[in-house]
Image (tube, one colour):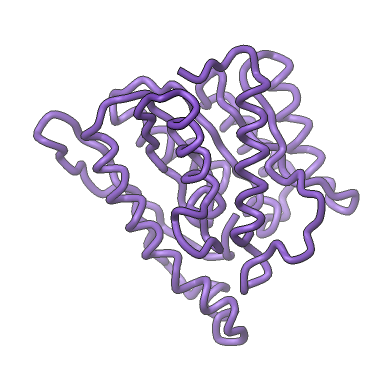
Length: 254
């Protein structure tokens, strides 16, 4: 999920980690005036959230460097601004941070996470940028998750193109990835196409589906821009992913 920005994604690097490992760092460079910038001129709430996007990306870039230096079970988080935690008051109240703490506490092991998501990310970004960045580490992940699709739904109209990109991503994801459904809506058949493709992938045994958007209510769950989740909503997203991990027989918390 993320504001409707038009990005020119590039892999900048590699960045050397103790001269033994490299990781491409995802950077976002705007090619044109973004709609979110225009929105920020009209809404203080949108402007406030927009100002957090690059600092949060830099936080995770530095976090990833540190995570690569450590040892322990590895979780790789893919997706869009929801996985970046945009809308949360701090990185510590994002769903990634909450679930990481639970993994560490439950297992007693030093779980670590590489957050390779990007604000504004779409299906094609997972396939073309995030998964190659994951492979570039040369590491074997114990857990891969992804929350993706909201930007494809919000800012694209070509249903065939959206479905094609979703299926290409599904083919590229590692087997056993925990993938969130997109939020349901009877008014948007693009969501139905995406969830149908996701369900086919689950039936084939490729991915494990969960529903990050299974909230008891949406009231009071949005950040200042009325687009991204707030701290309360991120806790619900964390709960939904955590429940999926605990209930899945194929995933054992080490």
